[in-house]
Length: 125
Image 1: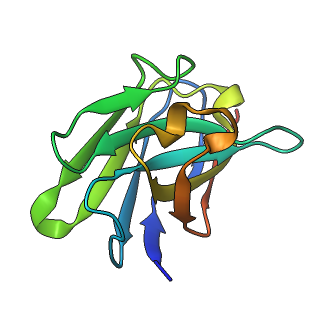
Image 2: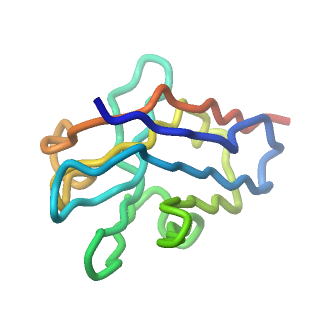
């Protein structure tokens, strides 16, 4: 069972920034995407962003493009999600996860394998 060390959530005012980090205990695929999905109360899960283990290519949901940036530190086996210009609608629990390449962009996040316990991000004045 893959475990994740997640951190960085919290309360921030609209327009503010937060950085999430995630370190998985292991990888179960030779090629995978690692990233985040989020779930707000009463809403479906939404793929937010991911980065590919091989070429480092990235993907973002339309709702966060231009505001969020995903990156990785290979030496630390850690992935980061820099979230800028946060909006109240970004409020959700953010889960770090790994899965098949492209999982964040598929309906119902098909292809996601493992995810962490999540970290709460609240954007409110």
